[in-house]
Figure: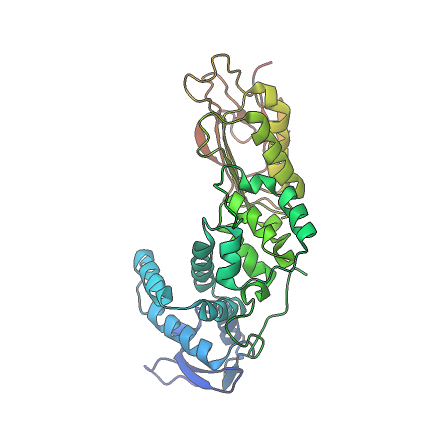
Length: 163
Length: 199
């Protein structure tokens, strides 16, 4: 898209369910994937993002706009990220981390990974399975063997039936 | 099956299925990396999908933590067994934080060799004895020579911190003759060899 003098360049992003979004180039290039396209001159017209749906892309663009409006102040950026992620459920976080991975946005990826890790911290195996709906398809014998192999992970841990 | 295909729309429908296990392995390793080593290892028990993921974590932080009187033999076995199954080709950090004396010198030297062979960025060795605990504590001595691999070093970022609590245990590197390795943080800018100055 041609930049008019004095007007910020705008990019058009297309989700995999054909929603179109306008976003300032200065915000969109937080994504290394998009930045590379811009630098290679491939960002004219519509940029198709085949791995991101409209709902997730809208959210990512909110993040791009929010974080790029904050001047270089890592503390403020961090508190924006925390606030941005605070009301997201796990489904949304999973969508977001996949999108961030695809778009190559390390700051968002790290923040979402940290948020998911926080949920798993200091929890029993059983609790984590239930919380994330992890299907345990070990046979009892296999599970016993893996537990034996990883006995050290329970050293010094208060065990209960959940483990 | 470490790296799944990237999933776009339609791959995850509904909220109750095992969504997290379907994330690409690289993302799950990023998450596991943020957990303590024991928590990371415990994810192997979640399901077969998770069994080997923790072995790719680039962070190995061994600390005796709460143990008031840690059992050194047990701790040494712990480090040995983790190192044996660990598969990440590189390490961001490798930390040993429990009192070990010279009788475990061979193990400690092996761990250092392991860390260097994985191009460790941050190496921390804190073997200090608990005060008043080990009356006859004989401090670990670095081997006469210990070389870091020369290729693909993270030159700017590699840091080594060693605290062996032995006043006269001065270990030099080949970078600068006067570089003292004891109780210091030390940034490595080129391949190096640790050399013992005394016999």
